[in-house]
Image (cartoon, rainbow, N blue to C red; front, side):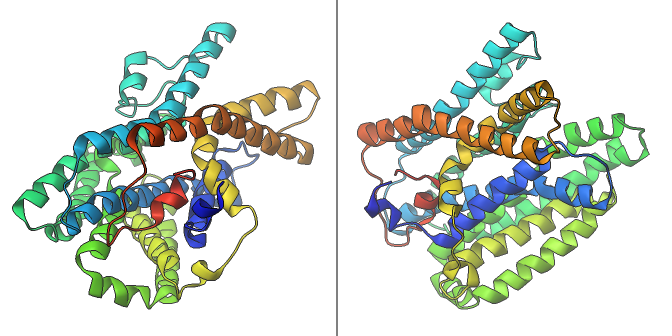
Length: 383
């Protein structure tokens, strides 16, 4: 990475990005047993919700910064940048899944049109399961700029803070209604898990809490700078509040398929990560001053890791089984970590990095506005 780009990075946000991908990897890694420790490790699925908050803050910041500075919001430019940022990696990995399915007779991403159109989260993905969260983000990217442009035309952009507060309420009510209709807690396994994942966990309309809160943070920063500044003076208090909400969310989710967890658990969790993001942005917070070796590299590779880690784990399982080992053994874990690193580095170097360079050549450098946040360089290294 160029030195000028590196200087723009925010250490606390690198840590959050690295934390999010580590949580996902811990959750998805095969485990032995089903005790309380395993359940806590599996709670790493919450890393996706941290990604949602960061993504909402990023996209909201890009659009609101222009709006607050009186600049025009160019939808064509916005969509072009997002497509060149997210699609090359995604379609490259999707192609690998299709080739492997044809070669080894493994489950293919089907129906393919859903994976091509980012709608496989309506139901349960047949393969390439981690891609469900990209559906939530891509659908959000499609609709949110139109909403932001409408707010700009009404000349009441600050109303977005209240609007996304309303989204949180609607989300909780909607999930409660879905839970009452499906009642996954009354179904035997594996039907309970299937009903829960297909009706409550994967669908976009049930998972907008984190993105809404991330957007709310960006709106607060751009349209209510005095309130934002007061928040930034309380970085460590924000961190403590984040931990409190995290503890509440763990308790809410501890009873499987409960009404509390299904309706408010995701909201509590998203509040925790929104407060954590705000803490990371505060110069007075611990996260802003803390340095973790390797966090920046993990943050840089996180998108490639997310897309390839399932393939890497399957490859590591094949190699360890051939050697008479298990993925839970020390050599198995080391091999899996190395495989994930190699797969992610290959995708980053051959697809993601050239894609970012192409985007910058075609669309030019990103403009900077008065309240432009510096989250994007932390999320999209190479910009």
